[in-house]
Image (cartoon, rainbow, N blue to C red; front, top):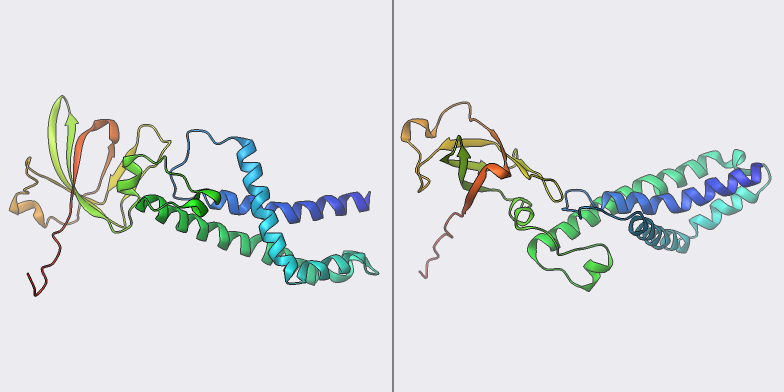
Length: 224
């Protein structure tokens, strides 16, 4: 029985980091409506094999396995095994998963997916909503919102304290950190431009009839 439990624990320690990477790689990225269990298992196993292969090349895995077979077993090498489990099972997979998420998210949002992105889980089936609100620099929005059967125009700031849901959430949701009543051209009355404190707003996408992204004009160069 002890040998069986040790084998199960060793297998879990070798495989689970791959699932940590696969799960964290999905953070802040639009996802499919349903991700099959088989897809998750296969991707987790691929990541685990890559990670364990790289760690094995360092010789560290062999040292741990030798320690398990040595006299006294794992009890005599608890510190070394714990450090290995912490680094290979938690720290490295966490860093790789979050880094992979950021790398794939940047490629997806910029429409720059290549073969290696797809191989590592990239996808180009995002919606326009995810493309717009997944950007990190933020923007000003001119929203046309339906309220009590009437259209209401709002100028809103989508910045670092704002948030938007991503696919497959239905309906999509948007929180803007500051909002001002405006006319159809986006003009705000002078007396409410600097109101304090700023008023944020939660908006359901099914209430938005349209929105325009207001981009600041590019600065002119000396040659223009």
